[in-house]
Image 1 (cartoon, rainbow, N blue to C red):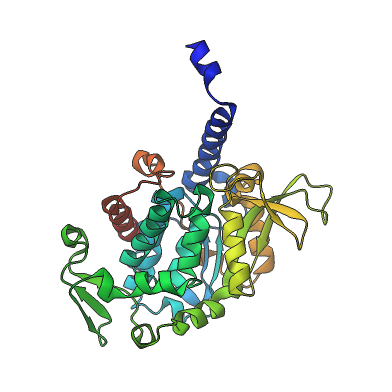
Image 2 (cartoon, rainbow, N blue to C red):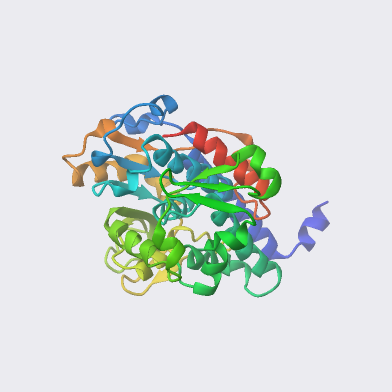
Length: 351
């Protein structure tokens, strides 16, 4: 047994060790619900008891952690419940703030971009398919997905956003904003039913460049606070590892920050960190700093910069301890069935 271990390539052993370490870090941060360390700093409401309550979203502040592939679809479902419970008017509010890291940021951007579930799944499968066909490397999968999400590749986007290509039978009711799909992934109709509620826009149907969605995400940029783990910063040479919370001002900055907060050494990226030339710092997944410093450091900064925010309307979209969610967190082969399953669980959980 010892000889076999010695024969294993060192790179494989290093990859396995880093993967195990990241799994412990990310999921311990993400799945610990309402840790006691938070309570002295801010009131967190993470229960499903608020699903049917009327919430004043004009002062809402949300904390959205990451949790890999399964957590992305679970969080996407929870965020979608905002539209379902509030007549899809959430995105029209202009003073919300979102603090996120890792896959939580991807789910948030997908929600703000009004990406329906079937498109989110198709984008993920398309990126994975390109890797399997050898068109992109393993470390390029996340960037390929982000490009699709932010409409950076029109050819990819048109395939994923053209509902007529994804579904053979589709009709739209503009009054009720219900898109009725007779063959939504065939056997998926038993899970989703044949009515998928998504924000409908005439611009989406008539504008091939999807300018409506680009303009919408531009309006939301200042509300998105992306958390990363930073190190070797020339601006703060005394801190070996520190926390960075930034808002992008352009779509290109948003893309770069999304790649930084999802950068896991030798898992999603080929280096120890993603270098930012403007600051001289390396960035990694925000889960690392959340574990090292505790959530209180993030939330204290939030309360200090938002004194007028009612803390009773601050929400943490943390995931429950669940073996299935944890097991599929790094499952790149996550199936459509599982993606829909986790999305529905998040939708039922609500905010």
